[in-house]
Length: 249
Length: 125
Image (cartoon, rainbow over the protein chains, first blue to last red):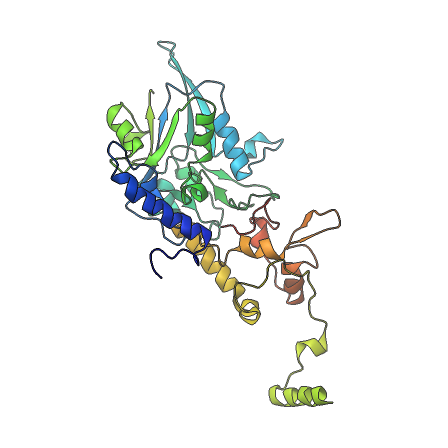
């Protein structure tokens, strides 16, 4: 097919090529950076190891009492709360911390940290808990047997188990009884060049405490911010190398 | 007369009665799309291989072409009731369940997957 012949292309493929072309043009414009366009992935292409998705959580911007990210996650993935909070799924939660010596208080969200060396992946007996090429840690529910070994191994308590039969799941987020689940970095959105729902909600709420991007892309905004501000990973002593970084802890 | 001869010939050659003679074939609502993504005969025999392959490719590698996606099947094959509400494809007499109950094969897909289309989306992941 000729490069210019787009008449027979499906719409999505056409848009994918068009945005790739747009990226080429933009890269020649002075003073402009390719941030999101560089990450666009056509539907038929596999996740690439050249990308490592990550996040910067700015605890100095995160507001105590705000749970916009938690609500957005629940809506996006159809997480419905029951009258038994102890069995409710918790993909992202807000944590308020107080330093008893100084009285300093901070608030921050904690979710799956998408570790490079993920304990949940190491202990999974079936290979259901796995790390995608682009660094997103997921549960393949087709092979998960619900043993919950990963839940015990995770230092961040990021995973939940589904105890009851579910109805009304979202199309893009299948989930059911007897399997373990956790934050997917909204992989269905990321694969289509959109931000995770929590990040979008935080920005919409005016806080901009969450920044999502490619840790491997030195020209990208995430890597740029990480090179400028002091950050840390949760329980970095464990050597899991999380994809989520925190500022202002 | 010709069809009876054909049937007798078939029975003699294969040694079995065609299923349609033994029992009524499953009946399910008509699909909305123009045609299936594969020939019907192939889909009847191999749909789970397509679904399984697509599911693995999507979950493990992030390949989201949609051609053999379960959401795509549901988008065309789910029917509405008299109140225009979607009926799950896993409900009795519906697309998936009618054949699976006929063949005595229990479907496990819909304990996790949504069995009705999501608002205004036909093809999904």
